[in-house]
Image 1 (cartoon, rainbow, N blue to C red):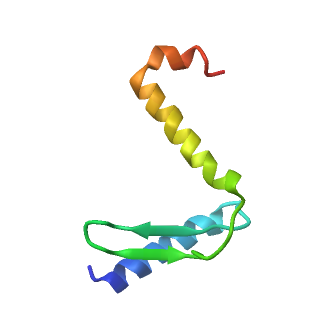
Image 2 (cartoon, rainbow, N blue to C red):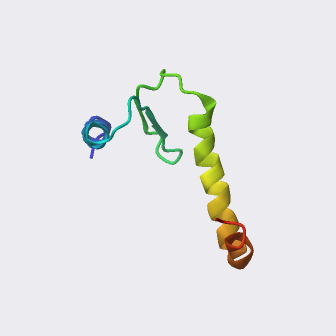
Image 3 (cartoon, one colour):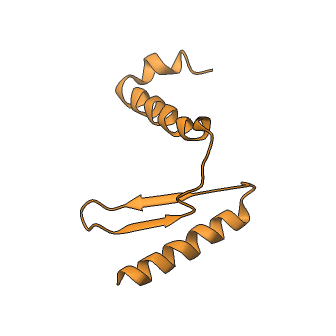
Length: 77
């Protein structure tokens, strides 16, 4: 699949998902370091830092759960 086709498929998929969501605004950015492929929708849109921090927090919780399942469970309410 050529880059233009990939971009259009990704754009249609993202727009379809977002049209069904209750989100007021969204942005998507992708860079494949192996192929150099780049894709973006609303890449210049600004968001409050709390929106992006949620991702880092969830990743850290997931990692902690993988490393010490029993320990995390007793603190997860």
